[in-house]
Length: 194
Image (cartoon, rainbow, N blue to C red; front, top):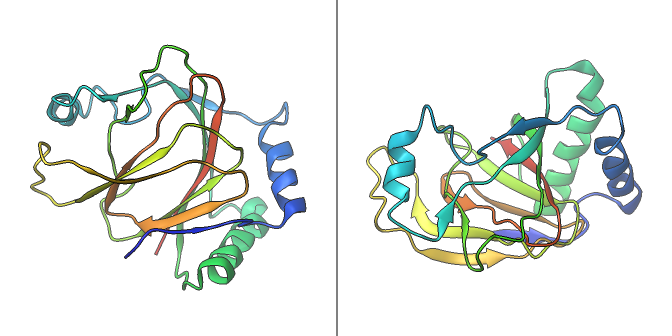
């Protein structure tokens, strides 16, 4: 599956409403000191990736949506509709919707990114929807998830710069990684579906 990118994934008014909703005073973001991998559970993976000096971890905030909660049904339906119309792709089930906010860090080195990862270890597709323009690229790697993966063979296929309102679709088994801006926040809606 190739990487596909579209502009205006949601209509302009809905884009504005999403931003207002997730930055409302009542929205509860959850802080994670490391967003790529849980250091207590995935130390072996981190050590394997650690051989590459361009990989690091960062703090971040997450706002997950329960896709089965009736209060979220209209939003889940609008996400499925956007996927079908913008990417001409069938949606069987939305597995996860999660907003991710990576604050800027002026100490980040250029051309570096967070540890490469996949979101789930079952076949799925992933969409990243960018809420703001940012210079914190998403890195996509040539490697795909396998149970016995060689961590020394990673190579960057392409990088995509977040553009407000755009979305990118790719195979969920493709290793990918966010980067952190020195000056701007990076906010995405991560969508996993089958």
